[in-house]
Length: 397
Image (cartoon, rainbow, N blue to C red; front, side, top):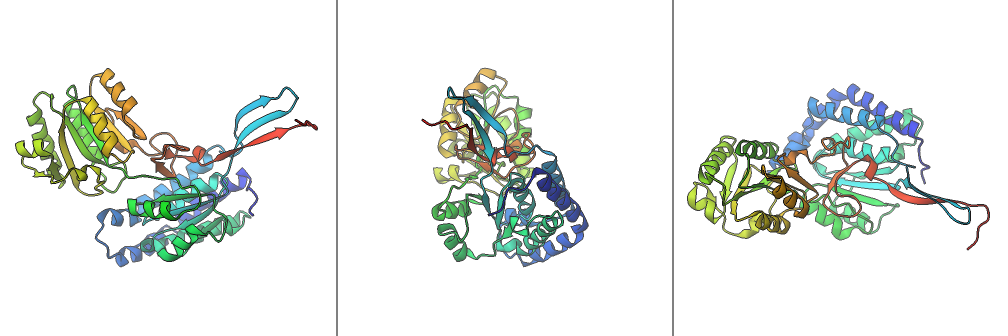
């Protein structure tokens, strides 16, 4: 049982981590090259997430420094009550205990997600993908060095070198206490964890995000938001589906302009029956594709009758992540935002902002599409549970 580390020690470890990441920058990038060379998969978004370059190391350093500057999320008073009998009652935030992070490909998770969980007073278990093993082990080595140099036990951060069978066995019957599991990765990984885990899991769901171009849209804004939403195909906040209001003035001209723009950036454009009939794009053969998160240079455009129909469509097919209405009509935007059931809803802004750093949280452990206990980006202040502190002098009931 690890006793909660003081906030001073936690911050010192994070700052030491920043120093070590800078010192070992070249070594990390070179070790990552061996992971990249060994990756034989076809998944372009996986390759993109696997890669560590100078920019990624800068981001890792920035994230641990920022975490060190944030207030302690543990022990924050949320409620207090003075009982008639004189007892003083407080409810305060508390750490979960041990957090297991299971993730694919991204070595930066080994710094950023582990850092958030560590700052909130948790022991960290990391289970990364085999494709990033060498990069991850190098970074865990730095965690251990930072912990030891600041007088803390190295077992605050532990890397589990498990294959799929061993991982399944651990999820079903953990050989040590696990209080929370956070899977970071594709739908298959999340489904696997959900199926086998015996403790709470934070579901960071699929993206499959929609942009609705309302009949009163500013069309330049619509183009900008769609192109920006497709600028990073490996991100869960990327845009996959566009719904165009059938009552949009000069609709065909706008759709042509949009298709031209998308094709210029090598994005494959698919269309529903209406769009493919009037424009040179491939027609979809089944409505099931509306459920699919692409994580690829691919987008689907459809026509829709109204705001109400759009809300129904998004609530049926989206991953519960992010959705956008482009309109100059604030009333219509309000109806859309109140009724669309996604973790983040946008009016005239890009889905690419669904991110802990961009939404003011500093960073994020995951983006939850569950409704308990926190939805959307899970920042430092959300990676806590709570407990009741009751002070008495002999009260009995």
